[in-house]
Length: 245
Ligand SMILES: [Zn+2]
Image 1: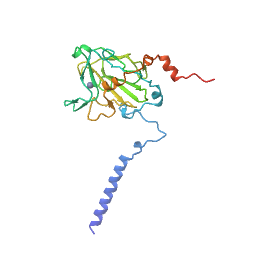
Image 2: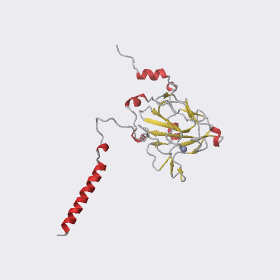
Image 3: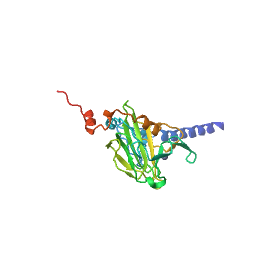
Image 4: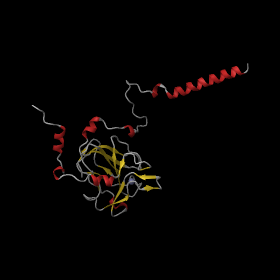
């Protein structure tokens, strides 16, 4: 007889617990109503994992006929790679996700050196995602076989281009910096196979969408003579075909 109220009590407590859990799991604000526009993130930080380029932006990505190294001479001369792609860094606990390009003078002798756009492209990120990254640019390119690649330039001292700008290969898009004094001046350069902007971290255990920047640039350096220095007008005519009469 004494067991019945105890069972009843257990049942009541269980129902209350399920109710509380249910409230937190499926409370109305956790459900997306089709009629409600998506709210801006409360802390103002965009989660770049979900920031895929819009159809309009994707359509604007120019075909990048040739890639060049982003620092030094046309052939990447006068530059050394202090930390290569996928080198393991035990201090940082992961593999390096890009190349660390430095002027041959070492330390801060390359501070302010021009950083060149690796290939014709569309600026899809220009800003400072964190103090450690410093000023950073992401530029989207379309390869001749239709793939979307992103080139990323980090720790910049200055950024010269705005988001949404179409920039040609070889344009000075920024200057080598120190990421607010976090490192001796160098350019952290990445190439990714990507349709969205996800800055991520500079060290990782998984390569995810990161490609070897030096190998990718050298594999995309070949272009026919008639394909080089394509004029902006040619690109524009590609977008705006002559209307048929
Ligand atoms: Zn780096």
